[in-house]
Length: 82
Figure 1 (cartoon, helix red, strand yellow):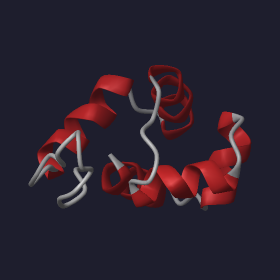
Figure 2: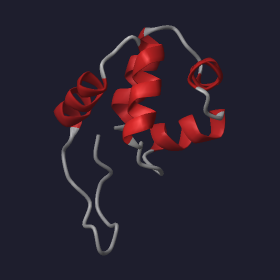
Figure 3: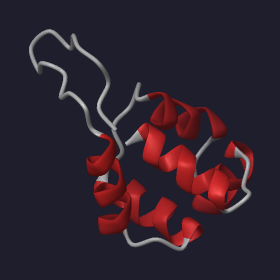
């Protein structure tokens, strides 16, 4: 999800700070999402999508297209997904 979010943000010409302010989140949280260190909630997908002018389902579709490996739930090991 992080790469998809960053790509969509950059395509709109927005900084992390601008996306954060417009969506009601902190720049730190947006950064964590983009780094794959946090998972976006459904509410976050709606808020971020609204600012990026993308449906939440489109953000997920873009993330799905980038997935190469799903990390193991128990260990958290593996390449970060989307």
